Length: 237
Image 1 (cartoon, rainbow, N blue to C red):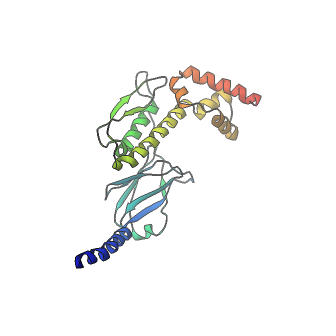
Image 2: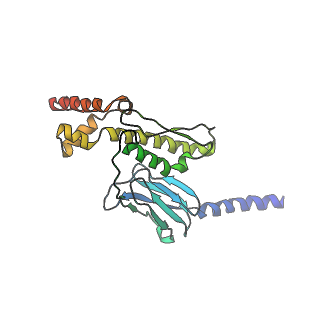
Image 3: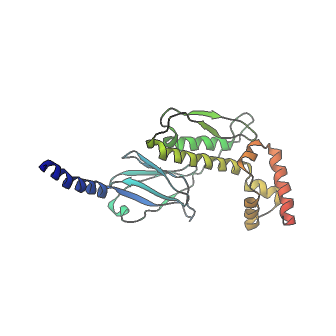
């Protein structure tokens, strides 16, 4: 009975100490010299081998202790690594990533498109999300202007995998948006419509094609689609 009483008294105390020992580095990730928040930045606590992604508003939260090394990385940006201090845990710690200067080689017929190269870079960046359980099979599909990396993952779901699977679905959706952006981009729309500024942004938002359409459409179909949409835009439809 004495041992039981000691356990009942000590257990809540130990749980409380364990809970209070958990500390989190929080804040938002921005593009350097800008207020633009960066989505799905990979946050890696190198010391404790913990990972997370920044949210849609750029916010992040990862468990740390002072002295941990935490890296922030995203395709197209220079990675940044910080050493956690006690002061950084007293409030939000903003992170600013600088754009990586790079010049992609012109893509010849039969090679991967720039979009596909970016897609494969994203696949490497988020390997910690995808590479768990059974090894994913990565396929490179070619259609229209070329799609990115298609991920076919076969494994049994478990409670431990729920968070990863949630992130995986989120990344898959973002990959679709990247693909639409690669086929329906500002440079192409501007050449056809001559729209600029707010008018260009309004047009692109209103007439943004679906991912499924972009997958089916050839380059000439995209051009015709933009031109027809512009005629509707002029009429005020």
